[in-house]
Image 1 (cartoon, one colour):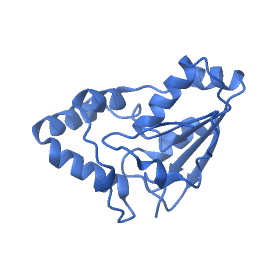
Image 2 (spheres, one colour; image 1 turned 30 degrees about the horizontal axis):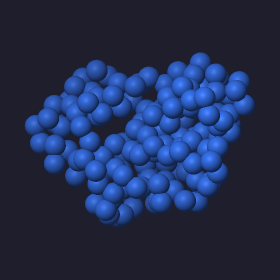
Image 3 (cartoon, one colour; image 1 turned 180 degrees about the vertical axis):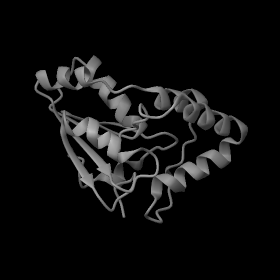
Image 4 (cartoon, one colour; image 1 turned 90 degrees about the vertical axis):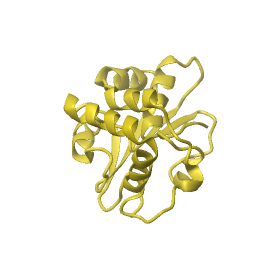
Length: 170
């Protein structure tokens, strides 16, 4: 399996073992990693049977002012930003994400905040025979899960876990 990590994280795929199969033809990603997983699948010449997008970073419904504010906060105090971010990623669980911490860059934060999901990209992969599954937490504090659900559920097999957060944990 090819896995792509979330922003400021490394090794967190073990948190999703229940939904991640060990097959070589699966591509998966968490949050920012979901964006990278989609792009990898679009560009790859390798066989891919399944694309798993876990809490995909979905900000295309946010105003430009939100994105600018996030980037300013990150620039002014990167450590505080990342600690707040990790707390919100873990919510509503009390999971300590410190063992997975791998601080991200302003460039990667900007890339994830400005990324635009496109229906045609998902259709392209489905036409290649790739099964796409999206997992969302209903109590997510990172993304607008309702907006993400509205977008993805029209296009893919989408699971909304109502009492879970960004980590799909409650």
